[in-house]
Image (cartoon, rainbow, N blue to C red; front, side):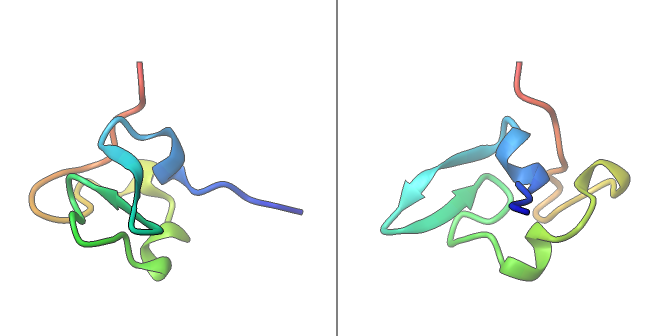
Length: 55
């Protein structure tokens, strides 16, 4: 079964940059271990930015 990360549903997530998934919290690339977390349950991902659902 394929599981999508909560990052895929966050408004801070961006398109691939040189083959790496980036976001406002991780502009150099989202760490794989972070993608396994339940982002809706933590208050901040990185750089004072947390999960917010896309509109």
